Image (cartoon, rainbow, N blue to C red; front, side, top):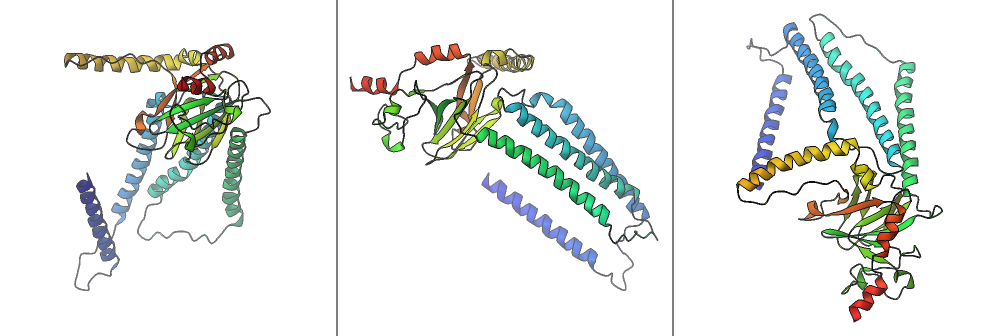
Length: 358
């Protein structure tokens, strides 16, 4: 791979040198005794203008095709309270970018054809126009300022760590290559923790002298009650990770030596999301692919693949090491009653320490 990269870079360097030498030679005046002069004529200019127009039309046809053909690859509806606003902001930004792109690039390709060079033709010298300059300066400033302010307010809402709405406080702990989650127990207060306390059954480094941590519970699945705000606190044991929950439109870097946090409210249970038309069709397509692959595996003597079932997942969005691709944790969004029933089956940190001593 390294050898191929070196050859590729060397080839690019050689092409660059050739192009530079070509530009230099074209910029020089022709020799007095040389009849061959490389100057574009009207036919060349017209042909280049046609190429630009054809390229522009082809580009937009390809773009429209991609929007239609790959629509299924877009994320489905958000499953969090802030997700809809996030999607609206992204859609508006995309629409603005597309309008600007069509106006500027479309006119660029069209003008390259319409006003291609002709013998004897001179361009109109247009010194300045204060009104026009004000318009093309003011409109982008207003549009960009609006998008930035909207994004800033949305970001502040997500990052707001206040507890006025009684959020569930949950810690997500990252390590190579997995996740653990710590629930704050009946007091809804997490105990202090530090990697220096990691020993034996205390895998998250919970301070054994802090009374607030005695009712904390550690698990390998992230269970969340629907329609209740959740304040996430993130810690990393080793390297930089990134907690990514695509269906909730949430992501936060998990930084060693510090606690990062954000808050959101899940609005759709796992079962309800699984039964949506979009997800039902997606699961069907995935299982059809897995069925075809299983037939090949069985014929070669291997074990068939298990059917795919949709689940919310927490993924790592940083390349944190060799097994980064497999660093994920299941998320279960359920009713408040189901969540409380599940929570009662979990073991507190106090009981974990007591069991370890016996």
